[in-house]
Length: 429
Image (cartoon, rainbow, N blue to C red):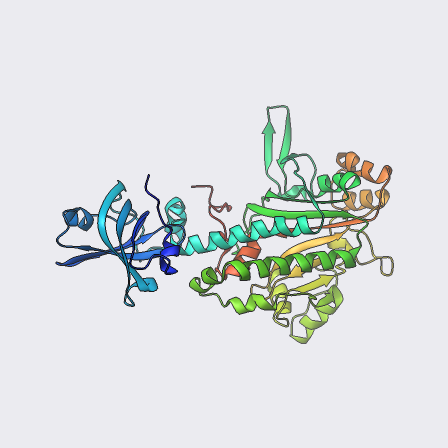
């Protein structure tokens, strides 16, 4: 086997004035009477190749369609006119997989690109997004390893969860109705009594009938839970994680950010401490901006976006009204109308990327909240056991990873932040 060279190494100048073997796909193609020019891409980069008319494979090269896969052998030379400043003069060419009439062209709709997503993931835009996404996923694991957390897993088939009204039901062998999990939180809470600090990273499912640019029905969820942690410690953990992700992308993906048209300097500002405000202070900010929100109402997306307009960093909003919060979020002792919880809102995009809280230790209080939310406390007996046998103060959060990818990359919709999005209108490819 010949040694194939990555195109990025050629563009770095390591093989100037040398012969190389490369392999990849035809990205662009044009021809004249004397020369055929095509751009070859692999996963690392793109380079211009030229086939002279005197080559016996000139006609073969002339008929290559976009996305034809091939091996190329040729001589590398500098050429400032070529994309990347270097060019390969082709001496040998072997077609591996033919491609004719590739269906994606310049003038196509976003909906069509979703229909052919299995092909659009080859686009340089998606390649750049997915490289950044890979960095973010790797950085999540790196961060929690540094912080001494154990990586754990939770089941997807569940009977209980944060909100039964927005969950997919599954017929489980005709015996019972189960749901697809929308959070691993309850299982992480069980695991802290053995491991103390745990996290997980995997898909979650929400049957929320939303068509906004920030919602998916199947999304990737990073969740963490820690024993002995309070709200302040939780806020610090969250801001350190978000900062770590931003700095990892800056370190590894400046090139991809620039090619996406994203000003990477914006990410340089995502460092602790993040500004903190209470829900009550958020309402005051909105009121000054001419937006009246009655105390006790949860913040909508339009209000979250308005709040973030006042900050150039993510903003931590704490102490939301207890009556609009999930049953496991405890009341604040100083003001029982408020819950000891937080959301982190991202600037620019103006939406929530993290939601978290201390966890309630009072079984009676949680049962009361469940009844008010028209849920049956009997379904949560195993969860209440965690409070009956050696309970400790603890806290945790969930981070929507796809939303972070959307924010960091600057793509206009969360559907472009994941390879194969699932929405209320799309279940394939």
